[in-house]
Length: 250
Image 1 (cartoon, rainbow, N blue to C red):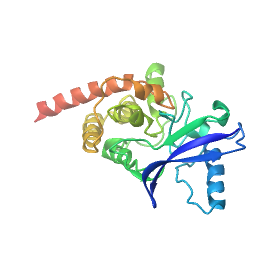
Image 2: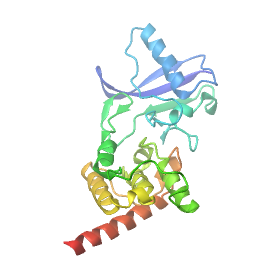
Image 3: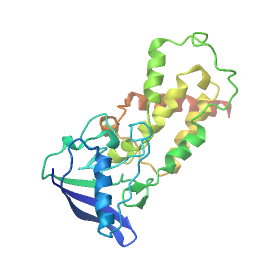
Image 4: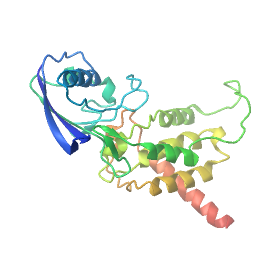
């Protein structure tokens, strides 16, 4: 398989531009990141600077393999991270455009690598349980309805990759934040800090410069874990109740 790759280069001698590369003998069974590895080996042999891109687990778990491929975060396959995308999804002779996630809150560090520490700061603002909930209990000692447990589990599946931000025309982080808020708001262990959590996380999200949600739903369509936008509605309710309770107490 022969491919033409148009890749965003930024840093070093590149000021921010697409550079075209030709790559021959691409095995259709390669993952997308393996294909980039092969390209980098070719560039190194040619005494050129390799392309910087992020990866870690390469198993669709960590969310670091964040690329926009032909205009779609993580590529054309639904419910799939970049590292799980294989070259058989592309055609011989095809031109593939590869660029980093685009958002004010995700500044480009180099080439295809962006700084997503804004997500970390949202989590640090309240996406945790800090109160003492005791030892790990026996599984059936805290009754939780199956439907509630399923919704919490679905929200917890968010890997924080940022595809929702890259897909949104407003660069909103509502789906990410809502998934983290919903996960803990639905479980008994998260109830003590429930109101404080949503107020702090939403405030930090706004502080980071993410845009507002306008219900385009591109975030849900491109999310590799298929997180539902119903979590955004839940977070909005959580925020409203917490804000009203805060005003009442004041």
